Image 1 (cartoon, rainbow, N blue to C red):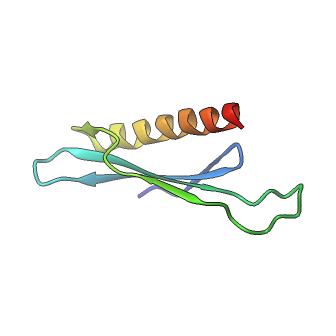
Image 2 (image 1 turned 45 degrees about the vertical axis):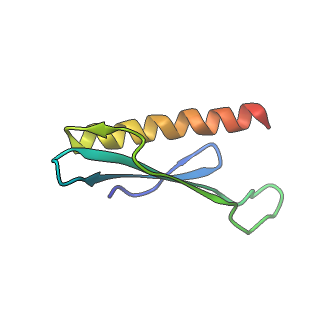
Length: 80
């Protein structure tokens, strides 16, 4: 598993799970970071996404999960 990344106020933790058939499932956990400007020290809700898609290579699964996270976060911020 990779170290969590930060993107636009969220912590992104991509992971790739190897399946018995040899494919890798792209998984993802996204959690809101505290808003430092507002003095909010609590973390927001976490969202977990399992098996976003399947890949032959672990690196491809991780890269896909990272891209998917950025799109999800951008959409959440657009709708807010």
